[in-house]
Image (cartoon, rainbow, N blue to C red):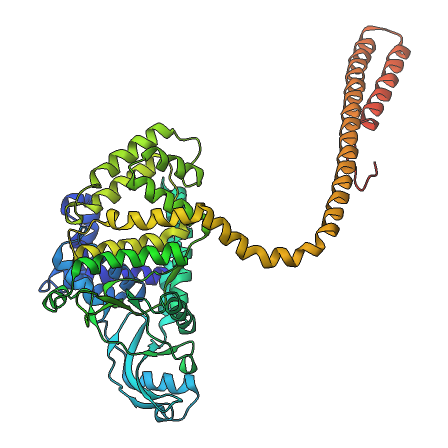
Length: 553
């Protein structure tokens, strides 16, 4: 099963000529020879551009590879524009499955005989088709009698089998990488794939996505910068979801936004603000912010608002992760590279034995060139490559819990570059982070902590005398147990010393027995020393240290 899927992946890439993306000078001779040998896998789409071939290959390989293409579609600094344009089409132009099948899935999920029992109107032709699900427009009648336009998201049939096969193969490759690559342990490929598996399988559960949407909507209730559509949970199941229909301009359609007079500078800055608000204020962030999931409400061009959809992938961070991230960001912004190096060591991301001075110098070399430059002049691809080399030199381990955050940050950077090339990401984010850190370590943080814990303390206060008595009693028992343990250790040490003395005497007598037996004519001397040696061996054995259990020797 695994080998067949691996062969299908390689054969698909070769049939579409995707290997042309690798410069010939980087291809070893044996790879070129192998390519010529596989004559039945020749490039069958030479008439198409490389970007088109890559997109078609990813679509044929399925949702896991489409997700990879979606992430790459925001990286205009890593890939040429003609490939980026094609990868962007993966976000809403994946071939749909028949609308009749979608209607049947909906009727089975809601346990109804006809779609008209729930929907006033249902359009079988899908409005959009994505790698895991597709969306249909419809109308429902609310309990108030109002007719509401909605969208119905339906999971693709039989998609789980394909996803499990691809994930199984990726886990196999990750295990090989962890075992044989020099950086395998540091990069933690198995942990990363395990996290990706969880994320992707969670995306198949639309009840989970509905819960994510409700949480994000509550976090940004009455917000002027981000709107989350309402989910109708009454009509939502594991494989289908009904959500309010929204209207907006795709965030990637910059020309239309510009024609409508939208302030792109404010829009780009608000994207950065939304990202850091979700991460540091809410600890709950939309982790699939590619251009196909983000729209803009242009009704007020000078005060634009984002509209978000597709909440299947979200990320969370612990309090410790947030604190280390914020302190790292602020140290970066302040160019305090010594602090950055120390934080990496304190957090355990870098081993404690590394040389802090050398690590600080390496970070400065990588990061110093990116400051005080507009985004369009910064080669983030080069920065990432240099940071990777730095990580390899100083044994920096990949943090699986931060993989989604790293991916989302890449999306935010890509969107910012596309909207407003002169956006200074660091200048936009720095005030927010400084304010967040001030709230975390100032007197307001103390008051919040007291207020949050006061009910628990009030509940436990009557139990404090009993708890204090039990603690003191346990302490006394622990002291007595420790004393008994130390006495037993000393006894065993004494027994071991006596046993060694008897063993030495036994060895000496044994040697004497041999000497007497061969050197003298009277055998009784040898018998006497032999008996003495046997007695000494018996004493050495009987006086050996004995382990105790339950206080018994």
